[in-house]
Image 1 (tube, helix red, strand yellow):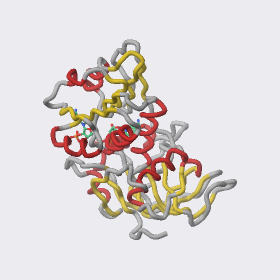
Image 2 (cartoon, helix red, strand yellow):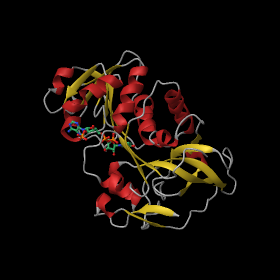
Image 3 (cartoon, rainbow, N blue to C red):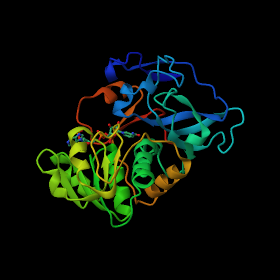
Image 4 (tube, protein in one colour):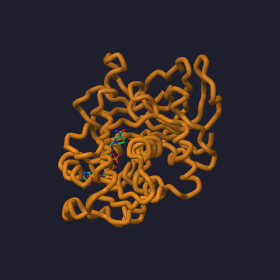
Length: 309
Ligand SMILES: NC(=O)c1ccc[n+]([C@@H]2O[C@H](COP(=O)([O-])OP(=O)(O)OC[C@H]3O[C@@H](n4cnc5c(N)ncnc54)[C@H](OP(=O)(O)O)[C@@H]3O)[C@@H](O)[C@H]2O)c1
């Protein structure tokens, strides 16, 4: 099969190549998915899981891209819940080969059925951003209606979904980012916008929840804004700032079929817009993923040329 591989942790996206790899076989409780579209997170090549398996053994050449949408072509021993020919989307295991390939093997429980009226490209943009937003806001952040939430990087791939889900949940949403992101963040549902290059974060006042997608000094400054009993949720590593009477959580997104169902239903009924900046073919994937232009959302690779199963 054709696949994008990486072999050199130091090379970044410029080390990506399109090559031939063996098709994966399904292990116990797996399905094999004919990939129609897949997503890639910019930092993936810095994560140890791109380079080693769960036992810490070298796994290069490694296929990145852990958000997948496609059609099931084979079931592993004992697999239930999904069937051959079914449209699916979800999160491929970080430590296994990913979805920038024509086929990927994934544990069935990490995938959800994909309704016929949702394009594969849209579906491939949802698993990481959608699940991370959902889990950060509701599982870890315990966001409630009427609470104030500060969403960093509100117009980014992840922040766009955090902003919309927080607004839908009845929160008062303060988005942040660059000056150029203001209109997009407000359009996505933020009530206010803070330009981190020019405005003072201290002017935001106290918040119940910080959803941090940036880290560093932005996170440190945000920690002081969390109300007693509130939470700072980080998706960019451990929280180093001290919080008084507040909780700090850092987490890595997990697959969850029920949450994927909630997310895709919101896309279908128009409550949630995905944030795709670029769609490229597998042939153009290396150029698209290694582009140094400023991204305006996720880059999705359309692996198979048609939308039909
Ligand atoms: N832990 C997890 O499970 C998990 C899951 C998903 C994502 N993540 C992480 O979350 C982060 C965001 O991911 P993403 O896909 O949303 O990236 P993205 O699309 O690049 O969005 C980040 C947004 O924040 C803005 N931003 C970054 N630094 C800024 C600063 N200092 N001042 C103002 N704006 C700033 C970016 O603007 P510029 O492009 O102009 O910098 C961009 O609009 C990444 O580090 C990713 O690895 C973690």
